[in-house]
Image (cartoon, rainbow, N blue to C red; front, side):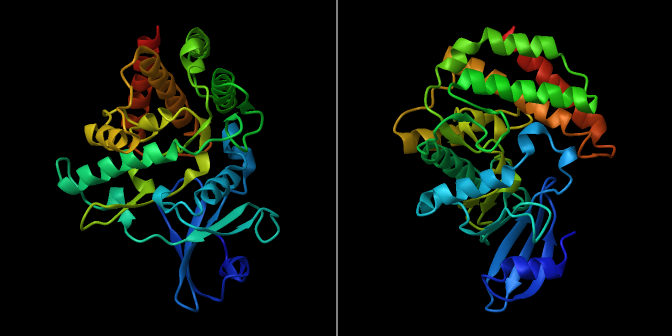
Length: 319
């Protein structure tokens, strides 16, 4: 846990720390809500300092988070926190640190909305519109902005590197995977991936905990934690926002279409193929990270078989 003294030194350029609260819910970084003497609240996020337990793509991801927040600066329609400070010197802490503004509202997973609730429908609609706006942000190359060896000039090449890194991580951590079948599926559908010719900003991790909402109205107030963002195919976020494959919300698609001025062509053959490939990639991430993150508990008895089923279903669809 980060000490109060270290937090005080980190936020000193902004003001004097009066209190700090450790936030739970995330499983990667260490995050504190810090209150300053003038009453302002800020969020201090530190990357893990045990880098030997990171997956390949997770190295330097807080630098990606800072990059995304900087790109969103001056664009309130992207609904992201304001980047206030960074410390990548690894002297105040033995890890990268990002400090951002505090968002109003509550995480969607804590809002208590049930299926069919008009407030949930509003969140989903506004998330779709957000994805249309997010896709207007473009980058120089495909892949993870700060990923070691995970950038390329084309999307098929970058996606292949991303998958290969996950397979290597799986071997390192003893996760049994159908490596050859996965590798063959990616190679077989390179043409579908090649239809993506512009590297666009993709969050990749839009689970409800990363969406801040007004619990009274359902308004989407903010989007956080873009640390796993890639330059790639916006369709990727339809998988990241539906990690357990429950089905993409019709309200989300309607919100996207209204903002973009045209429907999202998710049912076209190449797009449907890419969505299956992204299902494979996300299933690999979620399976491989279990061991280095030292997950434990009875919940794994249901979680792991479900991820295996998602992987098998996606590979079957690609066969």
